[in-house]
Amino acid sequence: AAKTAGKRQWRRYHADLQRGMAERARLQEGLDSSPIESSFMVLYQPIVELASGRIAGFEALVRWPHSTQGMVLPEQFITLAEESGQIVPLGAWVLDQAAAEAVRWEDSVLREGTADHNAPYVSVNVSPRQFRDEGFYHVIRRALELSGVEPSSVVLELTENVLMYNDERILAEMSSLTDLGIRIAIDDFGTGYSSLSYLREFPISILKIDKSFVDELGRSPEQYALVEGITHLANTLGLTVIAEGVEDVRQQESLISMGCPFGQGYLFAEPVGAEEAEHLVLAPPLGQLAGLRGISADR
Ligand code: C2E
Ligand code: MG
Ligand code: MG
Ligand code: MG
Image 1 (cartoon, rainbow, N blue to C red):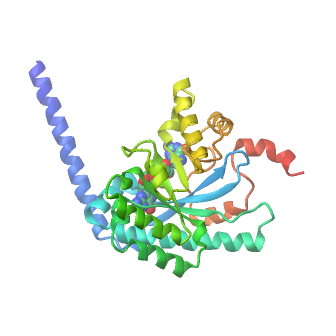
Image 2 (cartoon, rainbow, N blue to C red):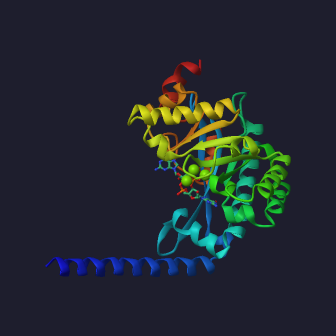
Image 3 (cartoon, rainbow, N blue to C red):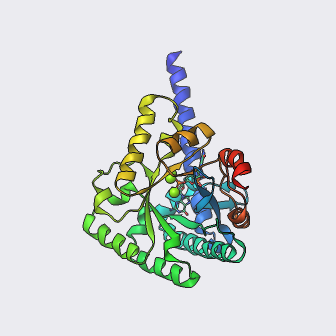
């Protein structure tokens, strides 16, 4: 009986595997035949100052609204686009969209903002394949020139695995980017395999603490100490820290008390469309703490 059960299990596993491969092939075909401008969209998720709920920036997050499969999330197609190289033009397009959007935020703050409004920056994810591409520097320069965005309003998010090999070239590449005035963030900090020494060696301005650490915050003193340690390290090195995936007020309060100034997560807002993002720029601060304090702070 055990044998037939095993066989059945294997068959099911095999069927799942084949379905997975077919699904991949279908997505890849869809990707190949999708003109970028008309097939993808960019959402924006607020990055807020934890203590005030004010928006400091937005992260640009790509989406693929698919005719038969609904909204396809990046997890399902970024790897495919990396393998095929399509991430290079797709990433350039996301960057152009994001830069143009940041200019709209600058404009509306200039036009209608009050003294407590700062124009938010835009933070764009860059995959290793994009970063290593020969033309990357020119893609960035072109995006800055076409949009007219303040370079200081643009952040590029790289993951630790970009920093693992070929140090000299990467350092030169990064420096040429930061010389333009843009900033570099390390995304998903703590999940990669690179040594911490790169934090001193490379021109990095921002650390984004991975959501997995924030999730575990309340679970044990050890987990708390881990996030606190990363925060202190960043503060000591003069880096700005952003906590990812903040979902409740207790996490927000813990992060504030350990000295983490910024956060991003469903507690404040999910990724929203460009129009909604423009609206949020001039709207009241986000999050429940801001709501509670806002009443007295407004007077
Ligand atoms: P990431 O850069 O770490 O982005 C954060 C992800 O966490 C986003 O998922 C965001 O929607 C999600 N998130 C934010 N707050 C919360 C929260 O409170 N709870 C939960 N459960 N999730 C939260 P998304 O948009 O699905 O993107 C996934 C990943 O895909 C990104 O991770 C990034 O690595 C990649 N990605 C997204 N857009 C682009 C892009 O334009 N280019 C490249 N190369 N990669 C991208
Ligand atoms: Mg990111
Ligand atoms: Mg991240
Ligand atoms: Mg991530």
